[in-house]
Length: 216
Length: 216
DNA sequence: CTTGAACGGAACGGTTCGTTCCGTTAGAGT
DNA sequence: ACTCTAACGGAACGAACCGTTCCGTTCAAG
Image 1 (tube, each protein chain N blue to C red):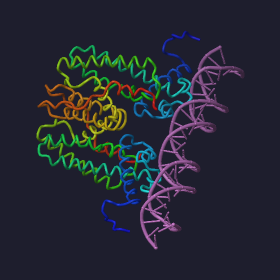
Image 2 (cartoon, each protein chain N blue to C red; image 1 turned 90 degrees about the vertical axis):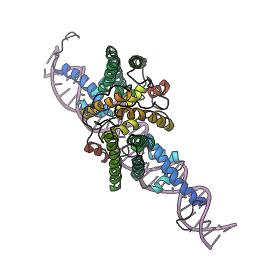
Image 3 (cartoon, each protein chain N blue to C red; image 1 turned 60 degrees about the vertical axis):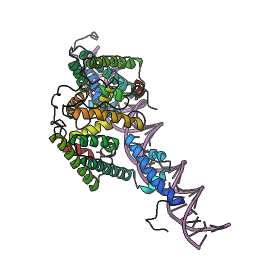
């Protein structure tokens, strides 16, 4: 057996297993972001593996969700931390909010909450992210670029609203969220300069109408 | 048997039945607005009646949902129509959006869609409401009070986001929606005068934290 | 050629939910 | 006062779904 720290070109069987590791986590991410109540089988199918390949790695669905949520919270902290490094208060705030949306932070954290018993690590990460977010907001408000009557607990409500946008495939959803995060930013911004233009196409009537056909 | 058009003070058995009629519809409204996937039994319980009292009136869950949706769409048309009568373009737009939120229009229409096969009447009402909404928007944009890069299909996305706000009991949900609809209005408004202050309390940390406890 | 780690997917048991069924009740009619 | 029956409450039923387990198969390593 080669050293555990062997290089990336693992061969044959072992390489397949390693690929499955990431395939399962990637698939779980995609599936649960789209629907937090999705069955485990959907994850396995999306990953292109059997159910047992998944259960070999996670003893239960709850563990999988907990792992995924941990990943989401780490992403949240990362987004907040890097936005905090931006000097201009408004740009920092903008970067933060866009980052939260782009990384599906809310779908991977709060939307998964309540479906597993959180560990202290979950709590610690959530807290850390919250502290960073609060600092970003306060700085922007002190600089007078975010309206003063917004408070830190308003932010999760904004993520929640943006996470609710689900229309079409994941790519389209991301595009629409990019569009509407700008609308939220315009609403949060202290009345001063006009905001930038809205990005991305608005939904078409066909996209909206598709919601009226009975479920597949 | 008295005339069908008899006055309101019906006595005894018939009165009870009539009361159940409205109790069931009211309960269904409350329950399905909170959770479109709620079981039929939850409606019966909320109405304080047995399951059979409900099935006597609606042959299936699908019929109940269709009826409820029809009611929601009629409310939508009503909100749009009365907002259209307001002269000032911005006030009209404001009235419309606030009315849509206050009447749970989105939860009673689109969120129920896909759960039953829509009738032509559903389509006609949805269309009528859409036409009115478009007129309200266009008028506001022509007057320069709503940003020009917003299009009519953006509006359902706004409703959708507001309908996603679910935190605590129905009363609290309504209050939070009143708060955030103002933020949306601020974002939609053409850059000019500063918007009014945010109403209602923001969520507390306790409210937000409650989402992390495993489901009951 | 042998071996066993990893795998695919069928099977199992439990839960949920829409719908039906039946015994009960209380007002309406005489 | 006594039926009669419309309306009712809720248990029971059957189907569907889902998390988890089990077993036969595969294929690279030795």
